[in-house]
Length: 193
Ligand SMILES: [Ca+2]
Ligand SMILES: [Ca+2]
Image (cartoon, rainbow, N blue to C red; front, side, top):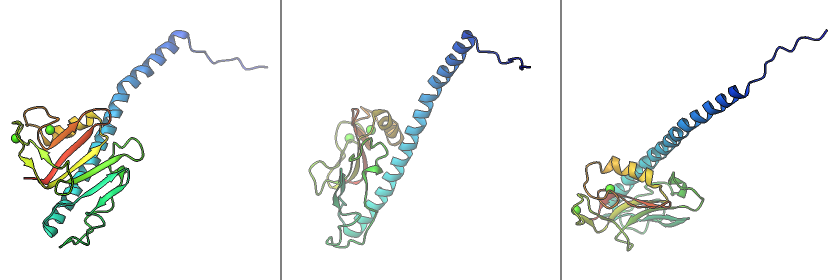
């Protein structure tokens, strides 16, 4: 004797309801998850910036000049991590060799990361710290430039450093930003007066 089939199929209404609830939950959760992932990347970027700021300070204390460590799809200048022995007073390495993966927002291999000292290159540190339109920082010094950084993350980072700085957040304070999908984020570290 066959057992009686006891399973009941979902009605169309029930299916539509379930699918609707799943879609609703996804609509709520996806932005939350995206925001959490972005916040974790921001935390990584800021830790990295802090570590490099310390390395730059030590370099400056030992040598009296400003480190130049540049990655542009690969190492270019590596005074901080490797090639500083010819610099008087150099007692490094001050950090490990950098990788483009040190930019948590690096979307494609071969992304770019800069640590620049104006003493050695043309586009160095220039900052209007107080937002009055005049530069306070315009000379040899160190900043970090990350590329690419999305503008949502750049704005959050700006608001951590430059909360009360007047003017356009992208051009004033310690954090500057060239906006765009492949935006460039600048964080002032030291020197440059
Ligand atoms: Ca100013
Ligand atoms: Ca700013």
